[in-house]
Image (cartoon, rainbow, N blue to C red):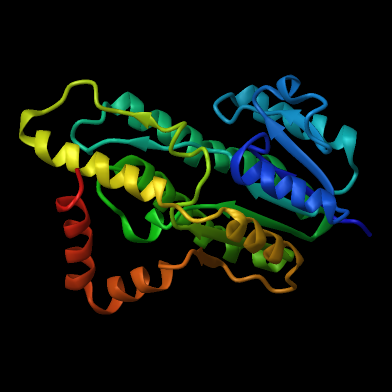
Length: 268
């Protein structure tokens, strides 16, 4: 039977690339967008409206989804965005909004789909996280925190869902060439003078990381691999340098921290 895959945030970035790839492979792909009408006729797969910041949108979504399909095999939680800025300078309302979308929006969406997976006693939940969820760089405090929260939530959830034959995986990419950086929200509204030099350098280091990002094909291929895998791993870091980052953090923490400090000091 042809698998049906639901991908949130499928109108751009990883989501759009993944949806197109899976569609070409013959899977039944359903994507979501805040404004699906904008992309009418531009994508080959079905695109439904979903706003992760709107509880009513999430609550009504399953009824709309199952008007278009009777079966759902995979949920790919991809929708989200990035707030940049130093921790103390980030307004708390901006920080809360980051969590509302990246963490709570993903949790609510997962909860909306779980009753279907429980009834059929099968399903896969694949969530796009980030390498920042595993290492925590500067200038991305609340984006990092939202991704850490997702990692913790799904680490626990996978045990609870295992008896129901529902599999849970995370994908943690390094910087990739997508629209994530271009769409980032810069949080600083009231700069603190003590951070002026560091802020400039941290902004430059973040920009360099994004500008030097790898091709997102490797992330799309990893997610496609997890969809077809019989026993997918929970944590799936992706990127050329990811192994070194994680090794240094675990076994040479001073060297790891030094490399982060050096990257900021040499930027700008």
